[in-house]
Image 1 (cartoon, rainbow, N blue to C red):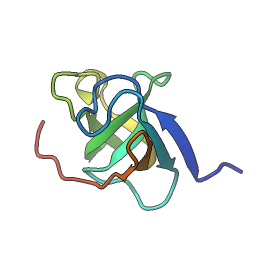
Image 2: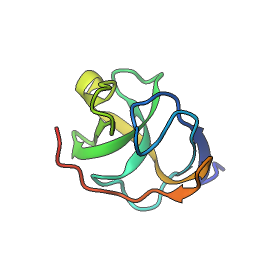
Image 3: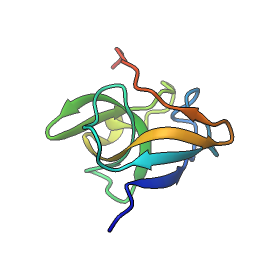
Image 4: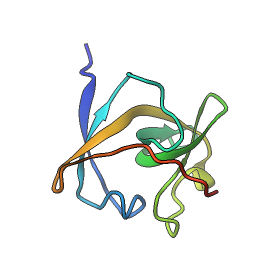
Length: 108
């Protein structure tokens, strides 16, 4: 049996200012379906070896289109296409504990 919650460590600046390099997150498998605005852990179909933390921009082709919050970093769906979400980030537990809530994004 897989646990419904698992930890993830953020690497890199692509989700700044929401998340920073070194933040530790708690991610939930299952639960409600992901929707635009959610921060998720996912794998790009074009790069399955790459595990990423990004924000869902839209649902597309049975997967999700992901964008980072930092517009200067383009290692998201603009570079790698559609991804499959593995779980939804529910909170940051280190170093600044906080719940992460979905927010609508209108950029592309």
